[in-house]
Image (cartoon, rainbow, N blue to C red):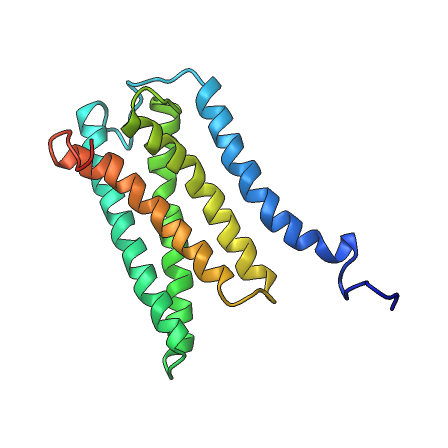
Length: 186
C-alpha cells in the first residue's frame, strides 16, 4: 500500500458511505421541492374522510405513529443492553420500524397533496420541514443499518434524529389538533 493511503480510501470504497449521506438529503430536498411546486387540494380526502374529519384521522394516525416511535426507542435501548433477548428484540425493532414507515405514508401523502409544503407561520413551517426531514432520516437509518462497519454512535444518532422528527411532527400537528388548535409553544 502506498504511504499515506488508508485501506478502503478509494472512491469505490467510499461509495456506500457517500450514498448513505447524499440519498437522504436528496430525498428530503425532493419532498421539499415537490411540496412547494405542487398545487395543494385542501378538499382531498384521506380514507374517505375530508376536512375536519381528515385532520382528526391524521391526528389519531400520527399519535399511533408517535407511540410506535416511543416503542422503537425502548426496543433500541433494550438492544444495546445485549441480553439473552437481543435477537427477538432486534426483530421486533425491525418490524416496528417497517410498521411505523407504513403508517406514516398515508399521513405524509395527504399532507403533501392536500396542503403542500408551506412556511406561513412557525408551526406550519416547522411541520413542513420536519416532514421532509423525516423521510430523509428514514432513508439514512435504513442505509446505515445495511452499511455496517460504522462507529458505535452513528446508528443511535440516526435513530434519535428519526424519533425527534416524529416527535416534532406529532407536536406540530396531532397534539395541536387534538388540543383544540393549540400546542405548547404556539
